[in-house]
Image (cartoon, rainbow, N blue to C red):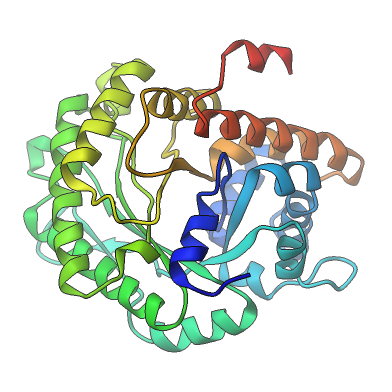
Length: 341
């Protein structure tokens, strides 16, 4: 495989393929496992992820890359094979989450800043040796209009950190996924999401240019433009698509390697329907695909339940969700295909 950043980025958004976000921290995966009644141990986490990575039907046809957590990139399968090698064997590219999480931004109640730049150069060198060819850094932008959240300082600080991270990645031969997530948790309407997302992306690309990041060797992992969960409003896929594409045309350079959406708390089907609507109104200047965690994993987790006897059923559930999102990335998904499964 070519090691040019722009070629890796292009492979990450190859026709109808998307990313599996399997980079849940140990704390987050414990919450997921609690729901299905599985104890979270190094072995159970490994067994679960190995089950996903060995789902050859899903991995070879629909998954272009896998975002890993630090623990997982070092782990070996039950038979001793490094998990990274199982991912590579399926034709997918291994990637790594490198940020240290969002912490409160001093002086700005309600705002956060993502930490993890200290020592990042050295960590990236190690991750490259372990096989990672792309990385992910998530900035978290919450919306609380009444409290003046987010502040311009929060948007600026997070955009600057994303740019510094991206420059370090490219220096190490690793494609940076820049993820400025405007959360959908609030009570705000879709137009507020649009405005805050616009301010965030405008600032992000100003900072990426200033840091001399090569845009062709980057992937954007954005939120869709949606009404907040607490607003009581659910936007139609058509409205989500129209506003999201309008936003990108105003703020996102055509030069970037591609766009892989986060699901951000949407239900499985909602994330698929919205991605499909976005692609159905194309053509667009960029490839638009998925980088889903929960929206790809909720069904297989439930089917698996920690039991070896359920591995095949869980892999089938994963393959179905991956197939639906593959179709959505091509603008060819239909709700009737969900019932058919």
